[in-house]
Image 1: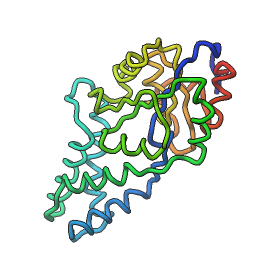
Image 2: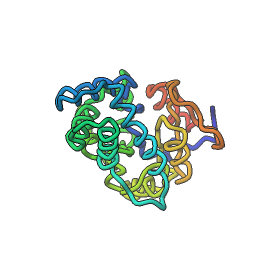
Image 3: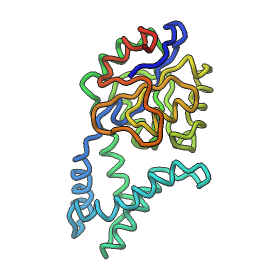
Image 4: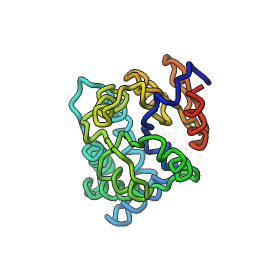
Length: 241
């Protein structure tokens, strides 16, 4: 998918989403995390039972967090609340905060995609590199350390007290970079939160489509699409054509 081009000189910074963009977040990882929670707390439950009780609350959180009229809630508070509801519905005693800390610890060790280091290396020196992610600092910051790459600026939803696709989050990143939106590129895997959100803030949005997300009905299609981060340097060098 292509759109109108911009000249190379206009792009000064590349901003990345974190999970499923720079690092992997495989769907089966939750089973290992929930199994560890059960073993650590000696709970009489299966990972599937705990997931079923917790995931309903997680889905509600995903919907409510994009509503700017509702109070901001961190991932920790939302996920701990989900564990409390799961424990109550299952009739078992569990430590919701400890379960969330375990989940955070596992999430903070997600592995980068095979091409992440090479792509970041090719972009470094030509552009300023930053990360903007819907995340709590408790799992985002330690996970970034594992990438062994120095980002100029890191902004989490917890720092900004709002979530993508709200334009305020993207505008705060632009403020920190002291750049106009047209001088930046944002790369993310979600059509709504990443592509639509960045575009609404005037940023050049690039959708990384690894085949797991798909497009959201009712939104404009992405103007720029890649299937690997290794395509990004060439796309920018070609003026986003």
